[in-house]
Image (cartoon, rainbow, N blue to C red):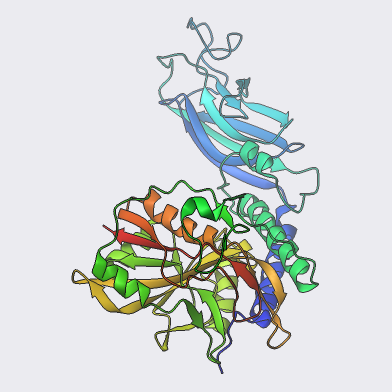
Amino acid sequence: MRTSRVSSCFLTLLLIGLMVILATQSAAQSAPRDYTLTITTSQPWTDTEIDLLAGDVLTMTATELGCDPQGVKGATVADLPIATASPGALIAKLQTQGTALLVGRNREIHVPENGHLYLGVNVSSTTPCQGGFSVKAQVVSTTAAPLAMTKADAAAAGKSGDTNGSFSQTFDLKNKLSSAAQIWMAGQFGNGSSTAAKTTSTDASTMGMNAPGTADSTANTATRVTALKVSDAPLDAGLRKDLDGLPRRVNDEFNNLGDMVNFVLVGSQQQVQSALDAADWHVADTDNKSAVVQAVIQTAAKKDYLTMPMSQLMLFGRYQDFGYEQAEPIAMVASRHHFRIWKAPFTWNGQPVWVGAGTHDIGFEKDQRNGKVTHKIDPAVDGERENIGESLQKAEKVKSLTFYLPPKPVQMAKNATGGTYHSDGRLLVVFLK
């Protein structure tokens, strides 16, 4: 029997697997990190790809590869990075725009703040020696690593990619896993809170969308502020007729009505797949068990798992043709943008039409059908509709897009698992390049 949402079993197993990998990597990171580097005098600075944290002890020992790390004594060169050191000497800096420090044949540095190691040559333009240096560097961490790095820490630490492989990725993994685990625990015990997209109240009467028989049926609807470039040109009458006839909502295998149909793509399958790939959307896995294995394997290989399984829902009497998702790596266990699309039983000007239902998972809640844990969606579902359009527009894969309000629009409803959502009821119609 198919499940209508990703099972809590998958989520639990995935987090356990990631925790095991994290523990292994954390144990490995306490050992000193040793590097052997070759620095040439043909360029002023070389990126060593070594990240540094405040409190680290950096030790460097340099030997000749045709040039003396102490520099060329007696040479006279103006405008040197370090005026008091000999031209051609080995120097270092701990930030991209940091102050140059003399290394010479050896140097020990107590790192004052998070940074990144660059090694260079004390020259202004012409080097006094053609060759280079062999440098052995060791980094010893003197403090325990925090569970998660802040965005400021990550920016200060510079880019990831240290030579021995695990240190920077471990911090990155901890950050992602910590975020996912916090959302998971909040949802598991019923304490989760919505992190809906930034919204602003919009009077529906100014949008011309009052439902029949109501004075202002969407006055309480939150409409997301977007950067969409929307066409004012009316849709073709034939297309409007076909859109009017679309089902308003998808359903699960038990015919429980669920997510609303909120966007339409017009273009060939190749155009759709190319556009979504360019917009950084990923095709979802369909098998929970194999996905757990794949997630753990990719994490162990320091890759990001971005294709968490998506449940099967129905439109036009069949399951989705494709499911796509977009999220921060690993944290998508708890929070992700995602949608399903179905090829419509009609075309427009010979072009296939794809009908989609998009929502934003923001945590977890109890499935009201069976009491199990399921994803909780952002109740302001229009935000995901706009997110899909913005991502395609940013990827420059859109000819034009427009909003269309069909008859009997969905403005307040529940999904198949019982979660409430609200909308202005419009479809976003996207014509692809």
